[in-house]
Length: 88
Image (cartoon, rainbow, N blue to C red):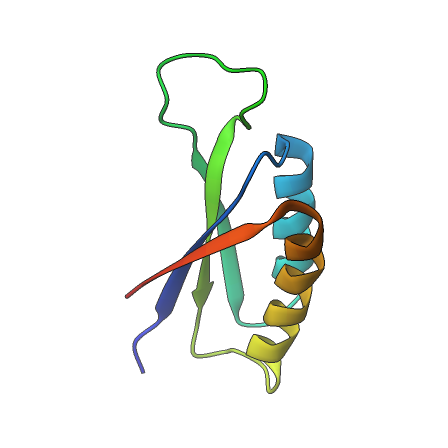
């Protein structure tokens, strides 16, 4: 099975909260997470230093793992808004 990778970005979410989200997602066995740096050349205080995060589902994904990831993301979506971009 080929690993699947999603990219997630939250509107106006601070770096510390991105780190919190990634820590929660890493607790799901078979899920790997990484932060995507901001690509903007101009500093904007209202922008995060992070443009998003990637989530990869490995062959070791535990039963119910995707459901748990979706629950975690829903929690943050209610607070920050979210856009999901799926990639292979």
